[in-house]
Image (cartoon, rainbow, N blue to C red; front, side, top):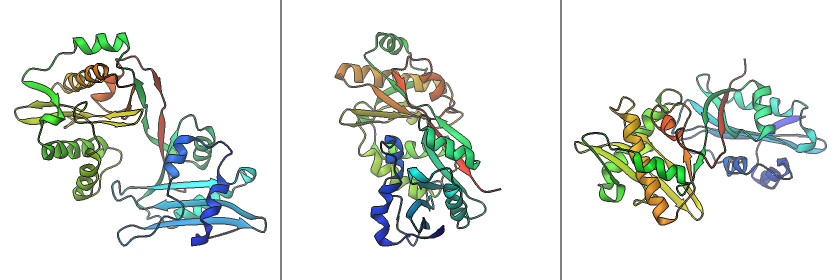
Length: 301
């Protein structure tokens, strides 16, 4: 077996490493990775393993400008040649190009047994988990919960459509940065600003909710609708926010009530097990389903 750097004409080979019925979330995570271009501001590399029989596997790693401590990686081996050490060899070859103060990372749906199994066997360790619950606004238990949520003293809850978009953007950046500070610190604020400026243009500003106190946004819950898919993500704008859980609950209640009124849902919520306000609140509600994902990191010993 030999490992070489990806070439432009290798692209058709990337599909050969897939399972006959590949995991849908994995397909989304790997999209556009193999053969990803190197840029002046971002390192990237794809490696190919092959022998006299042909392609054995592909592996890609690239510099994450938004979370510079973690470099996303994708390692795949053709189904008929797994458990032969090919994936481990590719991962080790990738790691040779990764700075010593960085780790290779991957996000895998918990039900993707093959992906979790390979990462664990390699020695990767979890550093975050996303429960990804789905909540149905029309569920009578959800309706009951939403109706009884109060609004903390001195705050008001409103649609983000009623707020200055620049203030919503600033609140989102601040919120996202502290949520990730402990386990995946952010890169430059300018990059984060560009990311969320573009992303927030796609939010439904009538379903999206915010809590405002003394003229400042103290909790934010953007909601994104794409066909039948509805996704929400939110938290308070500061970790030590006063009445943080109650403030976030008020935002969530408003969004659920408005979604129910409009016949929209269920809503899938993006978040983390350790979100101090969002997680305990969402855990109070009945979930229609969940599709948890685990984030893992690895460096060779």
